[in-house]
Length: 112
Length: 114
Image (cartoon, rainbow over all chains, first blue to last red; front, side):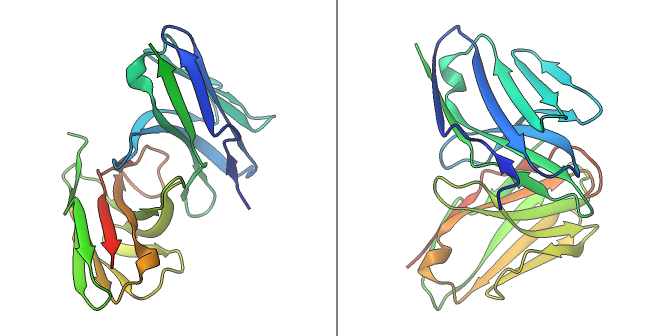
């Protein structure tokens, strides 16, 4: 049973435009959410996080929005750059053991 | 310094070999993790160490044996692996297991079992 779902396996956007990556979760015990970026054959790199007490967190070109009632979060990248092309994983943690649970990832391609 | 260092980067081993993966961090983190990632899949948690004690074992086969010699080091001992164990093995650390902070990942060890 997938507790963290990224329903879009891939997304393609033009350089300079906005990239929006979506993530849904089912476990109401999750209270901390993270986005990681991953290049092939490398470890995930932490991008941005948000606590369940907030609905928005911004860091430069990256903004994460959290809608707790819908159990939905999204990552906005603006403006998108070709170097942003990578797989983006949504991850959540919470519950009694604070495990980090990952979604399946979305491959973002930013075209020049 | 937010670096988690894993060695080796690549490893090829036979099914009868014994090898070890190593992970090191100097951020003062007290939680360390081993994840396994197959191609086109998300990282899957294997083990969690908290304050150098094994906290979570996600029903991992005994041919994988973790060890935490001190607060900066985490090892994964491998013995009698199967070809299906070939994957990217990722080490991560975070400030504490029960604190909602980010986990930092190493570059991974690409393991091939032949």
